Length: 587
Image (tube, rainbow, N blue to C red):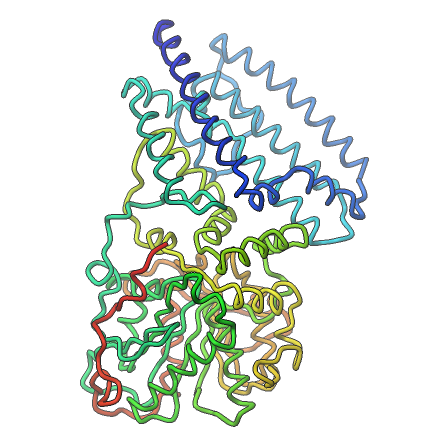
């Protein structure tokens, strides 16, 4: 790069950085964003460090000495590299770290030094935290989480001045990339809630529900304040006698289970001869703030069961719950059984928590320090804004789901590529304040759901241990929202015959891993061992989708073959074609 060009780039970057940082400061210091600031407040970390923390001084001293030696070695190595000598790196990024994939990070001595210096400092900071021993395991998890967030936020890849790809783009576009990036940033701010930055992860105009997403043929045959119930059109002449109901999570749109032909569990289930129904949750506003968990249960799965029984004339129904939908399903089944209602014939739980002792990193957002601010904000608005929840989930995988888009959208000035799963991921739903309070208290905060009688709904004690219904649990090995070991603990809570299966990949891709196009394996073990670790030791790895294993499990519980049913009935006529109107309301 010529000196005149360097000066031009540096001058432009200085002006751009000043404007960009000014905008960021305005966002972060906005009075409406106090709840978000409190989550990242360094004072909170200081408070955590004062809670029963012991320091392994010997370990810390050794790590510091090693760090000093590596820094000295890096200086020597960098000097040799600047003189044209080929040297081996002092420290290297992990093989799956795609932030430094550009060749300049290894071939250019300056960028190579920046990268290695960053990695050394990152390692040292992590090792300092590792030398701390906490009495409170939750405090330790919080410190490690926020330390990781800080480390990844200050990566040289996230700064226009120190990212070689961005600098090249500046030269090639004469700074147009940064102007476009600034426009992208302002546009995202305008579409974000007061509490979070909703960063665009995919082309929002690339998908249309009912056309290239959620287009399996069906009809909305019932609706109330909280749900639309969709019945799908049969694709076989004969169907199973026992119908099948899907309950998706109420904080997400249902069509994750009906993406396209390659990933649609709904379409595949229909092709297997099931009469399939699915709940499409409303995206509530403040007018529905009074709706509680009991309303979600009664107007959700229970109302759906009533309609399905009338339409199909079947007194038995197989039910599938996904994530929070699975937690709601287990609660509903306990409630119904206590009332003598045995319509739910089998239970399938997809990436579901029943025992919340190990909530994973999502628990850091629900700590004693953070939760009061979150509750106050939700109470004022009447809802939990789904976009805030979306950011929280993204920050669990901050490099791949946040910072990579920060660099691509705002520094490179590019538009993200179309990606259906990320389109769905950004299409979040709100949750009424009453429902949030009940759910958080009895799950993440107090873990009451697994304590028989600790939760009551309209005077009915919830007792999961008394559920003897045949159950199928599907967890995914790389799930960062529902740890598979924690899901396994939930499987042990129920008393009936239970099958546990572990699939490859994560919370979304592992579930919609289709039979024809899936690339992830699954592990099976007919025995439900005492612990998740023992279960895995005895498990057999099978290539391909878990869908066939589940079909082999649910088919024997689906009754005889009957003539395919038409959608709806005289009482429940078609209101509109699938996917319906509730799913189309975006934040």
